[in-house]
Image (cartoon, rainbow, N blue to C red; front, side, top):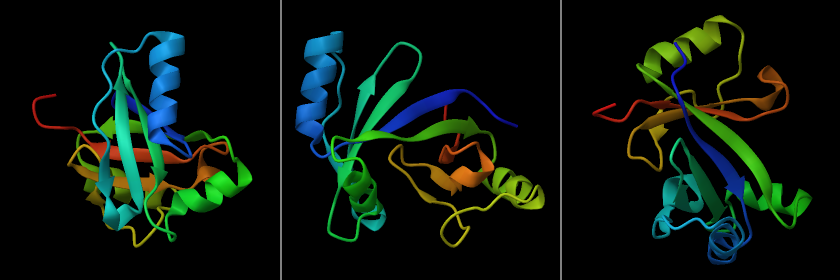
Length: 139
């Protein structure tokens, strides 16, 4: 059921400053423009790597779920890991059937890659917030 690691989400107070660190310290050259997902309360940019991506996320609005994360981790930190799945609804149903807590309403919503996603509570994955995303077309 689980596919490839798509990205690791890093919550940051400033995408511009974080992107500079990845560029200057690690030599990252492929960093996307910052975009927003108002419905999810985040702005994001991707640091594209040969085998996965790093998603830099910062709060968008005072009700952003990232605000509380950054209050606990003012410099930022790992927020989630994201795996691709072939069928997001089947993945959601499997998580629920296995006793996992799917966050929010449980209904998939459109994520940063333009495909449906769900989030599974960290208590179900050794303290790590897990995002499952529908495989993008062409994968």
